[in-house]
Length: 212
Image (cartoon, rainbow, N blue to C red; front, side, top):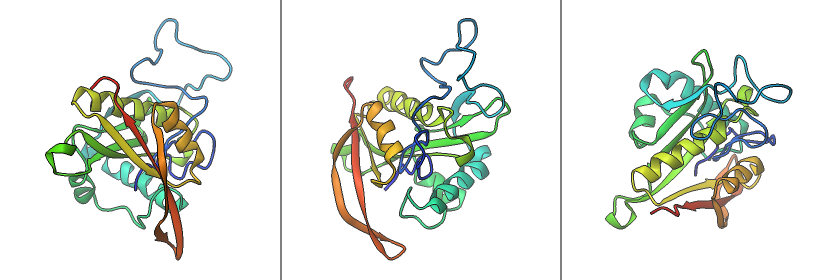
């Protein structure tokens, strides 16, 4: 499963995926305001740590990406995984054209999103599953939303028609963010897997592109 997004997203602003974040936050990417006319004043998150851009994920981001992944794993509501893999394994399992990081003005990685193919069968060529994770210290800044928007845009540009994700039901913030960005709740897969000796349900969500 995946979307442990905002690792564990226990707070309203946490990201989704299994995780991404919702709530007030400075967005970047398509539609984000910058320059003259951009929002300022009380309640607008700027300065060090605010999302400055969403850029393609590269090996240069490896240490930060894997550290954020491990933070989500450690929180317990992001994924069934128990430890982050090494970069080679992580990179090999994810589509190179559909993985991004959100960075602040100093280039620090705030979160990441990545997609993987669900099948090698031609019929499912346009279906992917994704994960989105945000550094616990960076939640509430719009990183999760910006990352998901970037993934949706790249997927549609590549002809991908369905993005899906499995999220623990306890990760309510992640589920809410996905639904706000057009994902629908397909159903709950009950007692799908065991984690630390207990059965966990998984909420299956998907976004079917209206453009393809």
